[in-house]
Image (cartoon, rainbow, N blue to C red; front, top):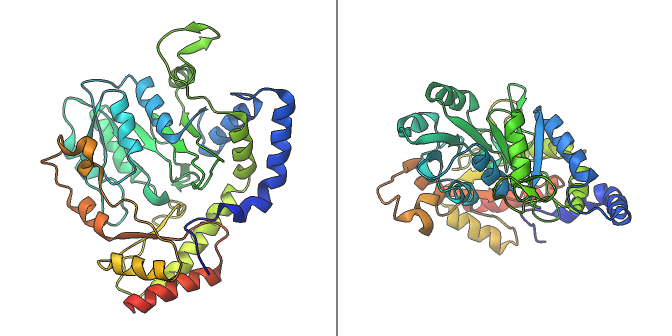
Amino acid sequence: MSIPMVDLRAELPLIEEAIRAGIDEVLRSGQFILGPHTQALERDIAALCGTRHAVACASGTDALHLALRALGIGPGDEVITTAFTFIGTAEAIAYVGATPVFVDVRADTFNIDPDAIEAAITPRTRAILPVHLYGRMADMAAIGAVARRHGLHVVEDCAQSIGAALGGRRCGAFGAAGCFSFYPSKNLGAFGDAGMTTTDDDALAEAMRALRNHGSRRQYHHDFIGYNSRLDEFQAVVLRAKLGHLAAFNAARRAHAAAYSERLRGLPLVLPDPGPEGAHVFHQYTVRTARRDEVQAALKTAGIASAIYYPVPLHRQAPFREACARVVLPATEALATEVLSLPMYPRLTAALIDEVCAVIRGVLG
């Protein structure tokens, strides 16, 4: 029996009726871009995150790009971020002409180290871009304190963490903007690419709405050069159908993570730390082991998927390698050789978790 990393078909029976009804409604309306379903989704995401605004766009990378551009960050500026993330985080910084400054992460959380942020600040630093990796929120209290001391913007990369919270405050509500990806495999996933930004800043929201629509606030009047990054109604329908299940899906992920940890405890593995209550929504269940390749090979032989997020940190990727030739990030570089993510999705079963863990025990136990 094969076990995938994520099984999107398993949740279809819960949402298919609502999706089909919504799509029929869109087809009858003839309104396919930034219509009433998108507007309703924006209100729903803003309510979920506890922010005044949510601005839909075409992808998570676009969400980051729009936020940075709307904040006026551009050539000559520096944005401090992590190299242990997907390249879209750094691409968005490069898109606006700014320079990504990569600092190390904490090995226990996989997230950016606030002390490393403070040490990297220069007169050119304009913003901090933390990533809530694998669904675990970064230390936003410490990051926010650094930002306030130095007068910096904070833009959260919430691509993997929708629904996570610290101290009762949701991700996406801590910085100037929170940026979400709704790529199909995310905790809240569309049936294609989609994204969203959240903010409490009225002017920032207005600027992002214009930027996503060719710099236009009024039809055929363009105040500046913008982009084509508009969400279509079909994706909004899918996301609205799934949003009502998000809390239950995230609860299931937490339960699966606890089951994995119970079964794997005592092995020569570093298990993920869930952090404070609510801080982790387990987009991925990621372990660390020096015998990573051996474990992954055994899982593959057994027909079980696994994944490495991420095998090559961004400061060692071709677009940034030359500029970062002298950058050394010990924790990041060690994690890249040790991390392994196991199958994780809401409708994963105890029997499947048992099967995965049995293979790992066969290698390490």
